[in-house]
Structures are given as structure tokens and as C-alpha cells.
Image 1: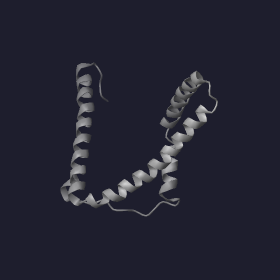
Image 2: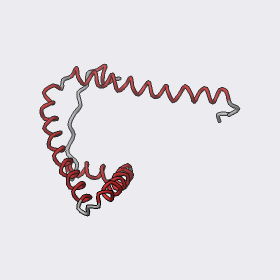
Image 3: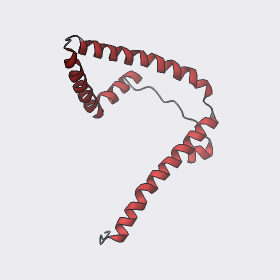
Image 4: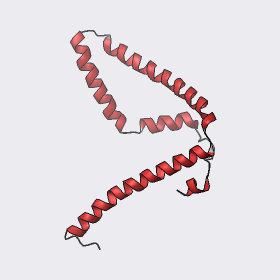
Length: 126
């Protein structure tokens, strides 16, 4: 809320030692959700390709998936470069206001049931 009130603009910082690519790779590879995603996707592909009895189907699927992900990187980078012209102080102010409102909403959504539970139970806060 303070940044929304003052109209602070985000400042770019120095790039990390390995650059943005290495930072993204580390975040992606250390995300535990990736294991569940690939296990789920791999199981689904195995079941679907077994029905067609084509040994090349899994390789074709994963090759197409990787090609699509590769092309998506360039498409999204182009969209970000094009969209930068629309970024202004007013835009960041509204983003900060909306994010602050969402955080307050979720904080109250957690706090109110907690207070109800504490006040209606025999728990003693110590």
C-alpha cells in the first residue's frame, strides 16, 4: 500500500551471477510441483499411446511438447517487449493497490476463522 500511495516505480537490480536464464532454470528445476506434473503427464501419455500401439508416439508427443515450450518462450518474450510501452506509474500504482487489497482480503480470510476457533474453543493462548 505504501508503494501505491507514494507511486514508487520498480527498480531494476543487477543481474545475478548466472543471469536471468540460470535463475529461471534453478527456480523451475527446484519446484516440487514439476515432479507431480511430469509424473501425471507421463502416465497419461503412456496410457494414451499404449492404446495406439505406436512406439514412436511418446517421443513424438514429448518432442512436440518441448518445441511448443521453446516457441512459447520467444512468443512471450516478444509480448513482454511489446507490452512495456504500456507500463507507467499509474499502472504500477493500480497493480500495487490490487495486490494489497488481495493480501488484506486473504489475511482477513485466515484471521477471522482463527479468531472464531480460538474464542469458541477451550484453547488457551500462552
